[in-house]
Length: 405
Image (cartoon, rainbow, N blue to C red; front, side):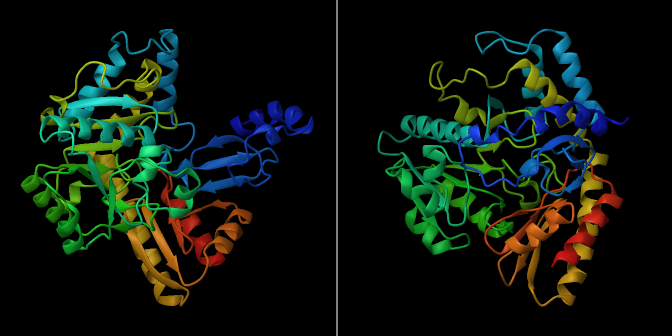
């Protein structure tokens, strides 16, 4: 009996007794299928059906399911008895993880939290704290971009260009201005040395359709920020830590931020977010300016350190780039054959297939065929397989995509 069979055997009495999911707040549209296990790049349902996972928990399960290095790190951490200590005390896993992130990035300091939205909230607070010391109380505004997604808490939602998400919860955090990506004149007009604290942008707008921001525009943002005493925040919650084939999504652009937010893949499925920042920004932060109860606990940090070390290996990153080239070749050829494909775009193991009609039917058909996909807007199918997916599974998923389109 393999792992998934054992899990199904244990779960069958629970499922048979009656699914209690109706007790959950209905904020998600979920299929009736109940997932009870995972193996490699597959999820397994209570009925035993295997689903090839091209969502990876929306870019979270970077090492798929059952990775031995990640599992070993979690077991070893459990053996210490330190699941949580709070940030009143120091622990070695947290210090080691912070040191690794600093050694492998532009940053000098790290703040750990629990999610991407919380990381972006922290980045806004750090930017405003820095701006108050370097410009006064009126220097608090944030510049964000159309088609962006930064989270659903009040500050992050205020900087997220989703009117439908925002409207039921107004008023949101004030002082946010939106600009179309690539609009140099519009961006220059809204940035003010007296009022603007920070600019936040995703190097690739993942939720916005898997749209890379042109490097020359990012370079222009950097120059304008420097000229006006404004901080630049890169939101790499979805594209950071290997997803693009580089360790960080911004590496290929040659532009370096002042702060960077991380989350989704960093702890392999356990909840963690992080804000990376330079010493220039960190120097403005005082004890008590910000805090978190659960962020950066020793158990989660142990898992994250194993994930970072594995993904950060040059050979691992090179293999992601190789698989990205494979996807590019397959999808490029498919786009030439199918009129319903408007464009394909991406890098590494994040890709978007823009279609001429609603993408939802194709995503639903893929689910029935045993492939898990997720959208990125109404007409974009997003591909986010585990970073360690095999070539065989990758080709199988691409074949299914061709069939359902």
